[in-house]
Amino acid sequence: MDRLPPTPEEVRAALHVMLRAIGEDPDREGLVDTPDRVIRSWTEIFAGYGQDPAAILATTFGDVEGYSEMILLRDIPFSSMCEHHMMPFNGLAHVAYLPAERVVGLSKLARLVDCYSRRLQIQERMTREVAKAIMLHLHPLGCGVVLEARHGCMTCRGVKKEGAIMVTSALEGDFQNPATRAEFMALIRG
Ligand SMILES: [Zn+2]
Image (tube, rainbow, N blue to C red; front, side, top):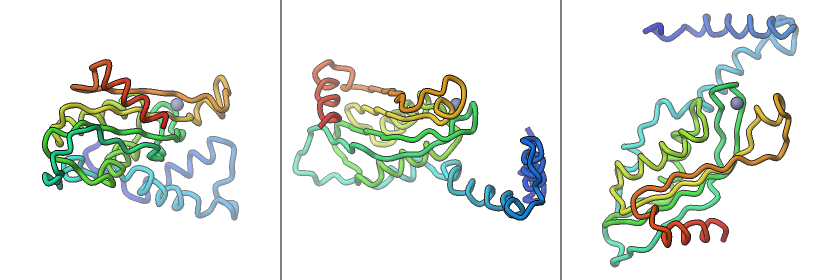
């Protein structure tokens, strides 16, 4: 792996080659600015590489009147890119934890999902990464993460099964107890 990141000119040239590879004329009017648009979109789609999970979960609150029940943020929309085909997969994340002493702002859980989704990913690993970050930085009694997503690489190519939803889960600590796990799954279904 090269140590220096490629220059914008090198990336633009590479995208020019890719357009030719699919049979296009990269110099026709509609495509002249496409490499630059792709590069700009990548700064958003892959912003997660520049984000630090520890920083996202750094601010916590201890004054919660002894609240010790499950905290769940359900239906967090996310969009990621499958690392096998560089095609999008989109869906919903459900993130819950059992606080030991401290809680975190709900928006931070959504930002944590973004931090891991805005990278090249596989859904299984992303699920584990979100759960592990919560255990490592928030020190709860347990946490659970469920992702449900539709994969572009299954819709547009290969088996072409539009609408199939892949579901993955990670359960840590107390969430491995059958009762806690059942409560989590029931709350997800609303
Ligand atoms: Zn794929």
